[in-house]
Image 1 (cartoon, one colour):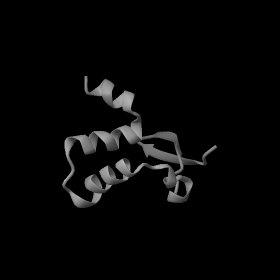
Image 2: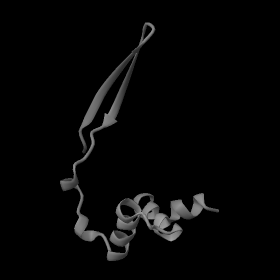
Image 3: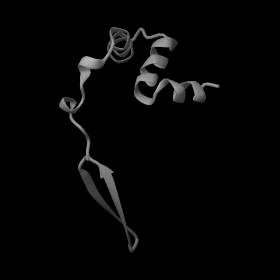
Image 4: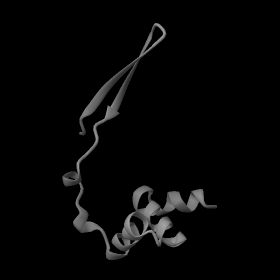
Length: 74
């Protein structure tokens, strides 16, 4: 279970309490499981700047899942 950050915002006499999952570090992810195709797409999107529409689609699918991306793009 991930740690939770408690955030309190004060607004004109009202306190809003939120529980936000703590940000995970890169060591929490197993990057050895990423395919070469996914690595190449991420590099094009984030580093090289010459990404195609398919590269962006592949990156979003790696984050959200391909079925979610396909459903959004219908």
